[in-house]
Image (cartoon, rainbow, N blue to C red; front, side):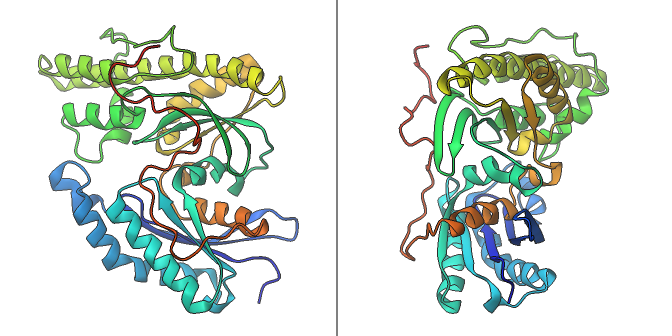
Length: 357
């Protein structure tokens, strides 16, 4: 049995069934022994989006096989596992329940601790899988369901500095893709389309760009794209609209990150200069480039997870599990799924119409 802890991570918050085994090397650096992900793209493609009931059913069909693959690939035996970490939220309740119940069952059967993990904290700590990361740091979490700036001062210690007041940036990418006729999941393909287009062809709105601190808004941008798509007739016009959309998002994230840098410095008394960008949209190469350039201008250290760890995966869940294991932060087996589990529990709910800025 390894002297270093072996953590099994399980992820099923949306439409990826995933399992991973991680440990530490002699220097205490996290090491991924296996990271297996089963995508459900083909299951949901005909519907143009994720169908929760179908996603949950597919998780049930796949989770045993995916977990067995992760254990086999890692070269360990199930009895060697020191703790089981599973996503408990946020996410789709019917999907969360599958992985959570499965993880609890394994922990019970091998008589090892169970750890409930916040999916967003998995993204927040994902750079630790390949980079030394010191606290405090500024986190920009950008995905299909979340867009927020947080000051991270330690495990479980988050202060939200800004958030979207309506749609997440990843949702804006996905809806734009759908309006352009790109097959699900189209969000990542928008960047591909953008490379073929003229980013100056269409002038698109940048809601609350210079007000509201580092809060963001994407609903107006999405509506503007919808209006233009009704007039688009050629492939080149689609490429141009995708390029204009990509450029607009880059400009919004650039400006709002610049504001967030100042708020982060003020909140932490000028301590810390690390900027972590995580979540599915962090895989967008052009956004990475723009934010890296901003960090050079503002003398911040830019850190991104590897592109293959930006999307939902179980290695990041196991990473949180490893950190909690070392602090003896375990959960009871009756710990429920929490589909709305914020990182900053004291932050007010801003998403929706009628918000005053």
